[in-house]
Length: 59
Image 1 (cartoon, rainbow, N blue to C red):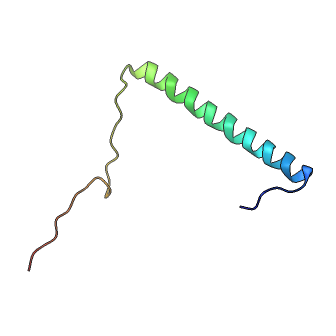
Image 2 (image 1 turned 90 degrees about the horizontal axis):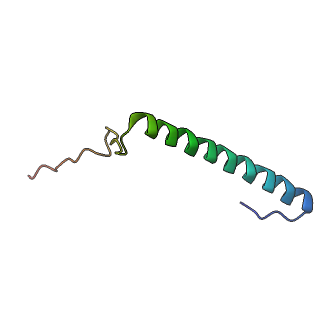
Image 3 (image 1 turned 180 degrees about the vertical axis):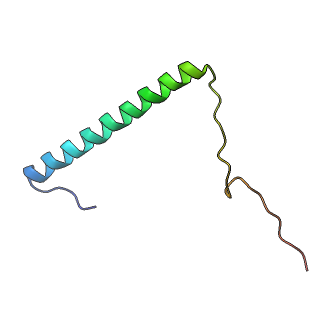
């Protein structure tokens, strides 16, 4: 993305970044509260193709 050149563009970028920060802070707070409720600090692994390991057939 191109860098902001005018003060108006810079202001818009700052506003956008502040929104991102507040959104991430809310997510963090929500997850921390969920962790406290569950009492466990272990992560669950996603089940999917990325976690499956396959072997190639030899001819």
